[in-house]
Amino acid sequence: MKIIVLVKQVPDSTEIRVDKVTGTLIRAGVPSIINPDDLAGVEAALQLKEKYGATVTIISMGPPQATGMLKELYARGVDECILITDRKFAGADTCATSSTLAAALNKTGYDLIIAGRQAIDGDTAQVGPQTAERLGIPQVTYVDDIIELSDTAVTVRKSLEDSEEIIEAKLPCVLTTLSGMNEPRYMNCNDIVDSFSKEVNVMTFDDLGIDESIVGLAGSPTKVHATFTKEVSAETETFDLPAAEAAKLIAKTLKDKQIITK
Image (tube, rainbow, N blue to C red; front, side):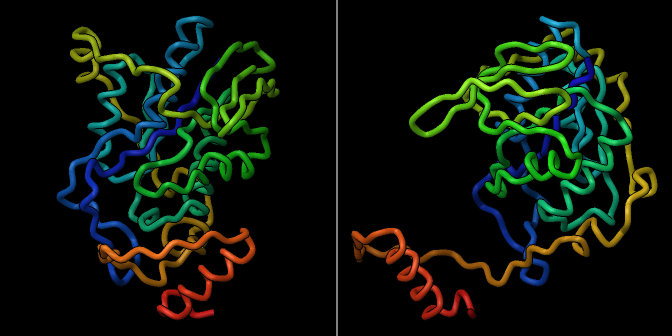
């Protein structure tokens, strides 16, 4: 059983600056951490490894310095780490990111793919589902427990706002996990020592055999129209409206403030 966990390195700060030209985050000089939802996915995979004898491979897309994060995951007990990195991948939105990840997954092979529900720097919750669509395999989102795993299927508990669902999905499939589903383990001394001698395997644009037009900034249909910091005011106006009327009011307000143009 080959379990792949998709992991993202995210800024450990709320003080994020945005490039006014590209609309992308400026990450230079900002400390980074492993995205919490992804870390829960890593722990879930390690528990499956211990219970069923699976292997756990981490795939991350990011700059070369993300190797430090991946070394930390070796120290937690994963078997292999792969970093997808290339200047051609810079500025990717979720659409371009999922195209790149899907190409890498087709190269590595997989039985089960686990991804965090969403990243704290983007909050879109799109990469996992989009990757599943590009691979043409089933997906279950908002997973807060993996109940059972066999060679052909996985049974999970999906957490919704006011209910839970028990779902069985055929393998291969993609699961997106919630940060509260478990308590990630600490690194142990032996694995920390061993992690220094383990290599992070690197995949570049040339390794993936993918068209340049669908990756990075060029392959990102999402464009940032404007960014701004909300001014704090003591004046608050409250509306109690049906959903359709509320949507119209929001659209009108944004248009009046020239945040949207259509």
